[in-house]
Image (cartoon, rainbow, N blue to C red):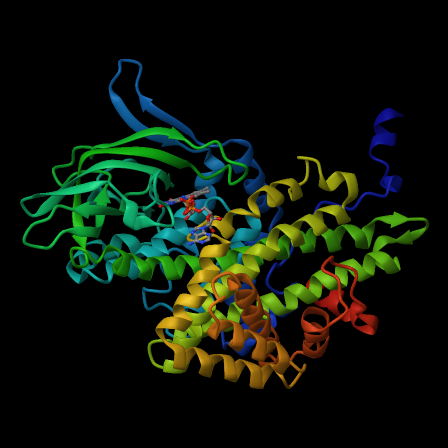
Length: 546
Ligand SMILES: Cc1cc2nc3c(=O)[nH]c(=O)nc-3n(C[C@H](O)[C@H](O)[C@H](O)COP(=O)(O)OP(=O)(O)OC[C@H]3O[C@@H](n4cnc5c(N)ncnc54)[C@H](O)[C@@H]3O)c2cc1C
């Protein structure tokens, strides 16, 4: 009797979300993939893989069993090992198998390599975000390693391997490797020039001594590290190095992990504090050019922050839509209650625009080398898009969580985890103000290209909404003495116009509605306050197609 009561379907709860093709069910994403000429069959298989109930559950388990640091064994011998749960390893194996760590550089996708990989990253993050930290860093570090072709050549086949090999061994003995990076120190994160970790020359390499306040994924096989080169024939100054976990003679390198950070979210991922005691490293790029060298990695990481945040918003909204389609209140499904439809459709409209924008940016990044206009777009828009998309994520995830009522707030469902993860990408690789100031910097360094990019965005966006007054205000502010104080206004204004332009370029019927509700007068900031009229049904249907 009791068990019958407990299993009664009339409890009006939605079934578990899972076994969904996260690619095909997401019409804005699938449309973007078609526009970019990507292989939709392969991406659909990837969407089924990450959307399977089993994979989604790996995400839960990996976060309920966070990594543990073992600094020493019971006899006092140094170990400096981090142990991860098998669920984490399973996710790593999957994402490396899908090539998210390397496919943009290995020639396997000659057509739109960054865009195709971006779709897979966006899908993977919906299952679990923490493990994607080393996946993103491995992908992004290749950008910086390109500054030292001989070094990249040595490591390339191990980086490009699709075999995940977590064994703590010298990199040459492994079937595949992952890369991390250590830039942030206690006294300087954003301001890396304040770094005091130092590199002393030692024959054909350097020995690095110092401390990093944040160094994530400490079980990676090597790390890009910024350190001050000693003044000498090379000129000295902040320089980029590659620091392997094992020295060339096979002995363990002198990385001493102090502790793992106790973080708000991102529990499956380990983020360490680490000391270097004359640790072996090889130079990457010219001495003194550390910032210039590592910026190639930083730009790829910033792009990934935006892509992953879009995926985080998407999974939260999918969970919400799934729930409200099953849950009834006052004899009517929540998805048919007018006030709930206003919220869900407004969230869906935001995702329509931000997904179009993120994939427009990956297209620009894919074509930057051959097309100066796309290069200018990528330079100006990367920080602006990271700003808008990452900053929208906590709000979208929170509203989605609220759609599930009290259940959304419990640890039994993944929404609480998504919510804790949501603010991280805003901070990583440059927080909000830093991104806004970076837009100013990009515009200041290449003023003509920036004005040309803005003009082209305005021309396109104007097909859907009258953005000229905003564009004039942006241009006026940009040229004013007050630009730095108004940096967030400039950054969000630019990103919103670019989002509208991306919708127009995508041929979206929702472009005028987005322009009116995001850039027009008389609208409030909370989701659900905009009047989306008859567009509600299609927006909701496209957000999670069944
Ligand atoms: C979970 C996690 C993992 C991480 N992993 C790594 C890693 O693997 N490797 C690594 O190197 N780092 C890592 N970081 C560090 C991260 O990249 C930095 O925390 C981030 O870049 C911000 O630097 P900071 O903490 O020193 O803050 P600060 O630079 O002190 O910034 C503090 C605030 O001031 C603002 N600000 C900065 N400059 C200005 C300005 N000129 N005008 C106005 N406002 C400004 C910023 O926007 C921010 O809001 C990690 C961080 C976290 C949370």
